[in-house]
Amino acid sequence: MEEQLSQRLIDQRIRNRIMEAVETLADGDDGVRREWPDEYFESFYDVIPHRNRGGMYPNSAITADEKILLLALSHIVDVACDATPNNMTADELIATGWPQRIQPIASKALSLMRSRGRHREDQEEDSPSIIL
Image (cartoon, rainbow, N blue to C red; front, side):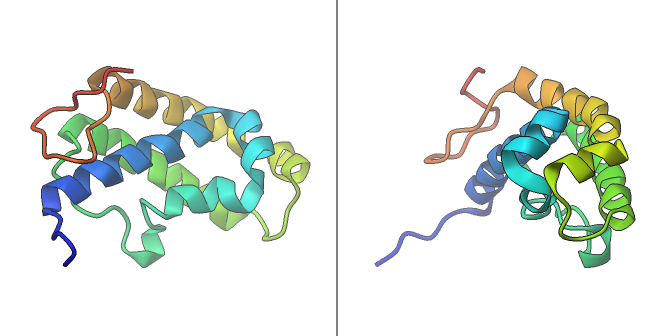
């Protein structure tokens, strides 16, 4: 029988995945080249949906300050995604300037999240215990 995960443990895991997605955005042009345009956006949307799909879900592992920065990041990612056509190459997306505009906000969010660290994924924690 499968073990039922608590909502808190799910939230901790999602926060860790958010950090990974934000890291790609914080890498700017290098993140686009590494992931290509579709995955550059979609890895973020896997954890924080586009505003047309309801936006950010409540998450007990995210602080109020982290949420403020993630909402600002989500807004600019949504605008960038809406402003760029599908099926672009990495160089075409980079040429739009969007990765460079997204990068400072993503870097700030990532820095704040890293300052707290990452949560364990096998047990509930009040605060992250994996220091980066």
